[in-house]
Length: 79
Image (cartoon, rainbow, N blue to C red; front, side, top):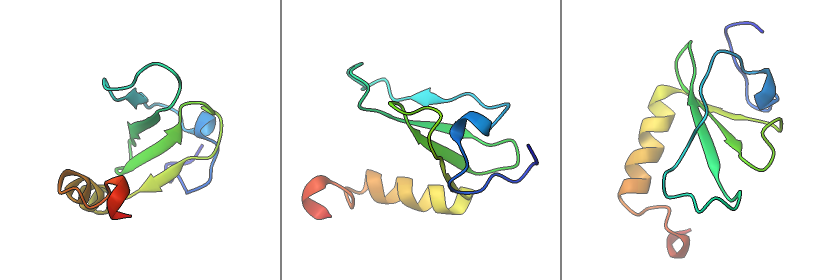
């Protein structure tokens, strides 16, 4: 695979990364997994479908999302 990972690529095709699951996961498969990409940015996948499509974010996009999540902007009642 080339160095540029695009949205929608099969997560199974993203090589050389370690997928991480939140420790808060209850183990029932209801998780989103994240992986830092060698070329920068972050990929996300659904843990129930590890070979399914990945969403890919730049470092700036990921930082903005995390800031919003930490600020409760994405709590269920807010979206």
